Image (tube, rainbow, N blue to C red; front, side):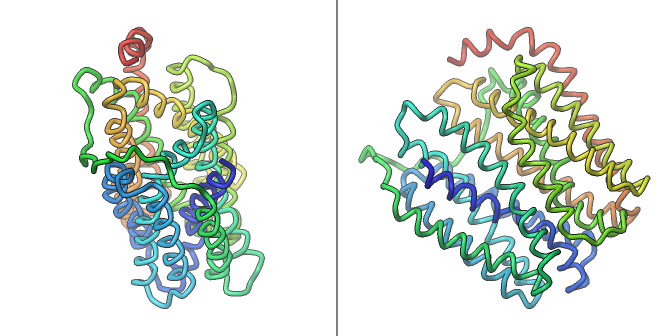
Length: 392
């Protein structure tokens, strides 16, 4: 288990490590906020279809084999980031990174469960979720610190180190066993969707919260590096990386807090913290306050941890066992749409009105979605335990 969790950690941190380097790429190639937003979202545009295919076909192809391919694709993407000499190389690297993590996301946890004794499967699922979230936050922290405090090739040095780390992953995967296969594996049907009986509950209590969460956090990942430089007038590249670590690494650890215990109440509280955190980030731009930015991201971290934990729980609990794979695939599909659609809009708005006003507009839209979920949860809470019993 430890070797595979190490691979998951490294792959996750590399997937998000580029975020603090955006200002450097913007200066190097003269990219505006819209172009940087498109660079950010090109990752998810590729990841989504790859994830859909891999989720359905990964077991048929071989989970270990696909994991190996994902690692080597990530190495190629990192080499492109290291050697980039033009904008197309940046986009190519980012899209290859999306393909690599789409492959990896579709097979990593299933492979971990196949090679883990059944008695430890619950622990494996818990640790894998925390590892992914912590890795997502750790990557930007590492690249930001390296770019800021080691002046030699600041936009390239992080990827030199990541290539070494990924080569370690390539060695680790060869030490792990092949998964046990039934011998009658067939290609799965590529499909997403939700059974009619749980459709309304799923969209309001699982899909809508994760879409909102990814939208608001995507703003932090995509534009906080530029926000820190242009709005707060602070050129320290490590700040945006450490903010990412606080947001996702802190969010992962805060999932371990035992209260509130009722999942519906926990989701409401998480969304409330997410909303307050997002508005505090906007206020930090109006007041040019780095302290308010840290406070806002810390509040978002708490909301992120609880929102992700509970919405994913609902996505797994509401459907019957036979429907869970495609429902959870639908859940992740909606989550990554939260990265693509709103962030592209944010890039357009920031070009038209400035970054702070653009964030105000997008956060207002996010608040409306949060209010919809909280209002619906009043009814859902009364029905939750009966629905859970039916699914089982």
